[in-house]
Length: 278
Image (tube, rainbow, N blue to C red; front, top):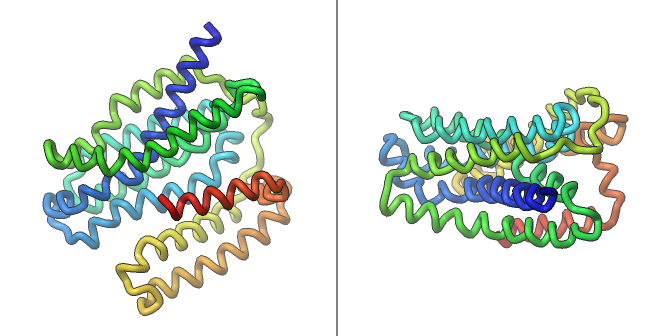
């Protein structure tokens, strides 16, 4: 039974991570159809991608804090349900900005599906088996961005764009049920930490502004555009303020001190580089 539960957890966590990663790229090939169907320009329709990315990059650094505050299983299950519900609403959106709003909500739910999936997977395996767990999860990480555009293209060629979002529904329901019955809460879960409100605000401002600059910079001619200049300055000020504030807190929303570990620092840099490659 224990081995069966491990298999279920592996399938659940990797599937959830792939589902989240596919959604970061699957919409790219559907922008023309979405803009035409909803009567919007391609530039406005690109906010469907930007909104999801901004929500993702705000939530992902906070997942450790949120899992500790709400309990990892509760947070993970709630995120799957939120992601699935937002997918339904995306598929039923009748206007562009309604779709953009629900994509942002979907990104909030999707933020937990990557990092929390990995922590659940690692806790399921003994230390000696974590190399295997890491390899399996790595395959899922690679498959997600690769499958997204291909799957999106097939759907657009043969069906309508709402299916890009509605295809998440059966997988989300299955993942939620399997999580409820098989995933256990973290053995490291202790008392609730205090809420670092200023840290959360600075983090959201910093990564949200940076994501806007990176997503919209090329379309807006970078520093020639006033909004890009404003958001770039906001990013720099917020990042400096966030690092200064977090290093002074006993219970920060993101524990930057962990980067003293050279292994973590090196793998973080490698992940940064691989992100550029993708």
